[in-house]
Image (cartoon, rainbow, N blue to C red):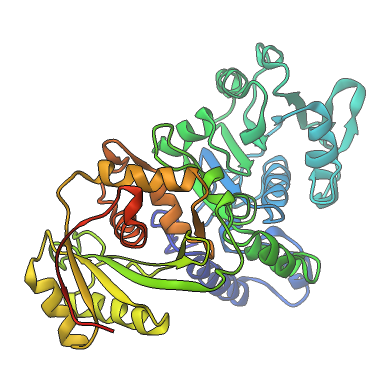
Length: 452
């Protein structure tokens, strides 16, 4: 196939559209009506975008995905494709005959990878293999073999050699690094040894190692990508119950969710702070942490709204942070949120822009009450009292704010791990500090302009 997008990252929709167009163009040129149904039954006719290795399968392919996203089906099709010598998985003119199947336990390999509803036996076409449980192997009619291994016994991989391997649910392997490393020494047969790793992502040391390895091809499958093959109402029920939560992002969106050990906040802390409804609020503020400039490389403009409830607790209401926005653009967003929530004040940090920050907001709405504040202490010192309020159960989140929570759980003594500016955290700290000055996070006020 020409013009493969494999070398450039595409969204799921872009990749799906590319695959559909390529399939149709190739089919019109090469497939007759007589063989059309047989081709449609193959993987090229059934895969959704991220499941198809356009341009050929990589030597090491890490596929992370949510529950029901199609990662097991992909692994099974990959094994069957290699054993039959079929593109896009196998090299042209070459089939694979010594394959390792590695799961958390031997039972998992059999029940999921081999005999499961999306496993190798269920998806086999053109020569169905037979499973020999006593010998822990799968044998194709032409003699090609896939051997069964588990993460419970890394030493069982010492000695055998393979030309391909399917590693399933690596994120929950018991002896993950020892098992994976033993497997690598055995992948030494044929012109191009290959492996595919299908797993729900978990923040293990091995997962982080693979994600950081530039030689590993990565794909992420979301459960929603595979909606056509899931029970009616499943996605809606899962989104209603787990949407936006740490568990939902990991188990449905296929995201790797990790906590930084020295961060001020943790995922569990934020999960405990969630409330479905904010209740009656006595006061509402919108806090703004403006960037120094509006270039593409500039920091984001942190915009966070919070309120004070009848019990004296702060409630985070919205994260409207914007990136690469011009001053008038972020000002419109902040003022718009102010009016939508019927807020009492707009709190703006002026360390970067001085009086110009207030002036920009005034160009959008001259009547908005703006409280200009200036930071005299470092970000970590200002954030510590706010984190203490969370630990005491005195701050609630009326919604799940994924980007804000990611930043909070990555904010340590030296800032964010990637060196970015913690703009959302800054805005959050200003908002909570304005609502709860007695907690020791009261900012130094320069002036208060306007009234409500």
